[in-house]
Image (cartoon, rainbow, N blue to C red; front, side, top):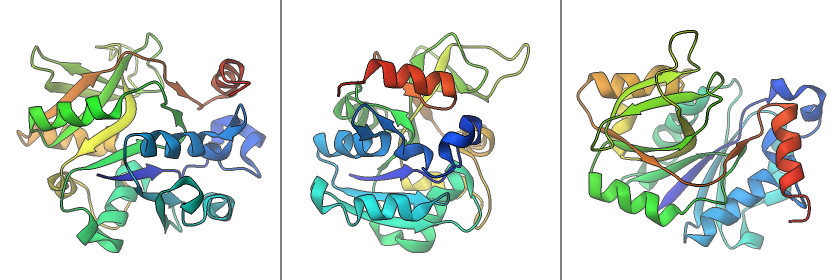
Length: 240
């Protein structure tokens, strides 16, 4: 399978830490988060990787090049203005490499530390369920800055709320930033503009009667979205 890593965000909540380094290039232990995620993908046999860029793009390009050092092939998609999680995927698939995405593909958020999770298990779940997409979920009591999902007894997602406000915390199943998507999901993403999976796309797919499924993962995920979370990630992986 092919994978898209989303690495374009500015990481503004981290303040001056990201003035000279894109958020996915912050080091956890001895390696940038993005490098750890590329190695995670490769460990499950994923070698065709596409990365979207915006903030300080040359830092990422210069570090990874075409990916040969990691035994993967990396291609880049630069966004002059940020297109959002879904808009960035749409640009990669529809505008630049449409022939490469005729089969299911993986999307991961490049600034999340994912190494605890089994990608083969996730892909096999998607194949069995045969939905338009599979969203990986994990349990977390802190949901205010995340997307949350409600699933039924068959693991079908019946509701998705992005960054729930007061009274909207209907679940503690948080979006892990790992998706397996069918090409048909692109029909729900507007062309040539900003679009976010959590805010703009998933609810459209559900309303249209398409099946989205959630697989609940057991493991540790750290999204380095704030100085506190960055410190937590660094503390737990200082020697790795």
